[in-house]
Image (cartoon, rainbow, N blue to C red):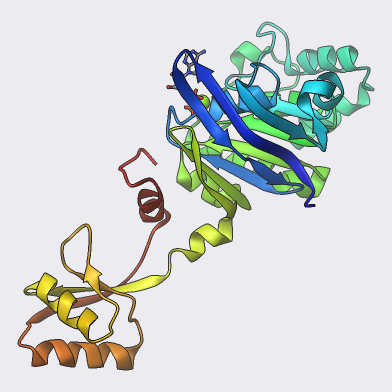
Length: 306
Ligand SMILES: Nc1ncnc2c1ncn2[C@@H]1O[C@H](COP(=O)(O)OP(=O)(O)O)[C@@H](O)[C@H]1O
Ligand SMILES: [Mg+2]
C-alpha cells in the first residue's frame, strides 16, 4: 500500500441538491508538492475545507496521515498546517506577536518564532504591525503561522491569489523548498496552470467537482508530445486519404487544417510527396508542441480560465 498523506475515497459534498464535490479519490503521496488545479468554482476550497474538518463530507472517507479523519480529528489536525483563503491574524499586532500567540496556544518554544520568521523572510518586518504589511507579507506570515507547529502536512488554498508577480515568486520559492527543508507534504491549490506547473511534482485536476486527472506532473507534460501541423488545401480529403494509407492524420480542431504525429524528417518528406502526388497544395508545415493549456482543454473539453 502506498503511503499517502491524504487519501480520500469517493469524497462527496452537496449543498442542497447540488453536488459540488463528486466522489473524488484524492491520493496525495508523502513528500510531494501536490498541485490541486481547477478553474474557479470547481470545488477546490470545498474539498480542502472537508480535509481540514471545517465542513462535513456528505459521503465518502478521508484518511490523513494514515488515520481516519472522522475518528481522530484532533490528533490528525495537530500535524496539519493550513492557509485557507486569507490568513487570520491580529492586524494591530506585529508579526512576531501574532506568532507568539500561536506558540503560547500550542506550547511551542519562543525560539522557534525567529526560525520561521527567517524562513519566510520576515525578520525585518517582524516588529511592525501586520496592518502595514503588503498582501505578500501577510501570506508569508500565514505560512509562518502554519509552519511554526512543525506540521507533517501543509495545505495551502490559492496562496498566491491577488499577489503581484514578485509576491508570487517569493511564495513559489518558499513552497519549493518545503519538502526538503521540513520533510513535509504540501497540498497547494490554484486556478492557474502556470503556478502549479512551476512548483508541483504531482497534480490533481478538478473540474465541476470531478477529479479528471491525477498523477505525476511529468505524466501531464508527457502528453505534450510534438506534432506536425500542415496547412493544405482540402484538409479533410487529405486526412481521409492519409488514414486510408495507414498514416496518422486528422483535422486540427482549432484551425481545420491537418495534424499528424509524424515528426521524423524522412517520414514527413514521404507524406508530403504523397500529398503533392494527389494534387494537394501544401502551403506550410510546422512542428508544434501541445501546451499544458491545450492538454487541459482536451481533458475538460471546454475553454477555461486556466
Ligand atoms: N456554503 C456553500 N453553500 C452553497 N454553495 C457553496 C458553498 N460553498 C461553496 N459552494 C459552491 O460550490 C462550488 C465550488 O466552490 P469552491 O469549492 O469554492 O470552488 P473553488 O475553490 O474551486 O473556486 C461553487 O459553485 C460554490 O458556489
Ligand atoms: Mg477556492
